[in-house]
Length: 164
Image (cartoon, rainbow, N blue to C red; front, top):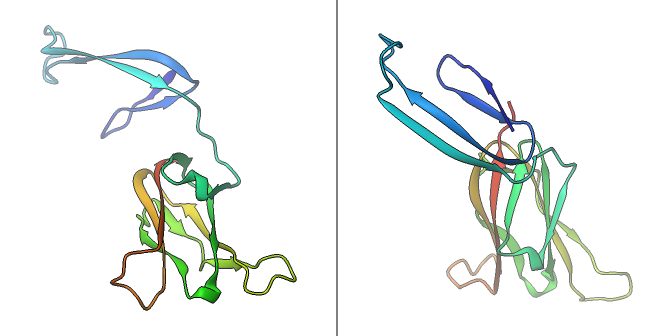
């Protein structure tokens, strides 16, 4: 399930299919590779799914608490219920821009016509900038009440793979 590509600084492997395999490593003296190994190591590797770029993933309120797997270059949108007429808006409380780069300012999707004062949705868009892992946390509060606890919070754990 994996292919080896030698590199001057490190060994790199690339999954070629989902599945379970093991990888054996031998530690020898670089000055005399014919000597018996100093150490033997075996790693069990499981590739659960092949990651490919997605055009976009939409997350909503029920997705809070999820673990999301993405690939560099993927688009991620978060759509949460909001009613700015109450003074409350969603804002980013935690994020790692090296993993998830905001793609512009959040936008508001109004309620259907004919419902004055009704709530709509606030939408955040991100682009996966690189490999890594981070929590994305959004909080719903009045912007002027920074010391008050948020009325609501929403979060997901994002793990992303870098593509080289």
